[in-house]
Image (cartoon, rainbow, N blue to C red; front, side, top):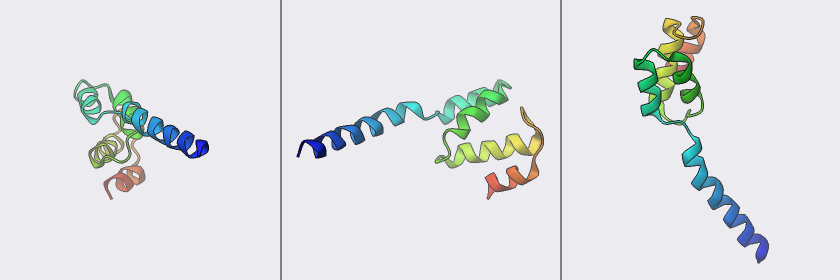
Length: 79
């Protein structure tokens, strides 16, 4: 019984703190607008569940903002 409680506490801990660990799209778009493309890319790469971040990554790779132009990565992010 105690192992189940431990596992439950561990899962709750991971879920609770994962919310704070994941990057925020709003911060990424602010960095993009302020031409801090590297920071925007790092924030979006850690939040691949958000379609807005994936789209922003595609824009960064398509236009070569903070990275080398890579049409394959841009295409994969847009798809």
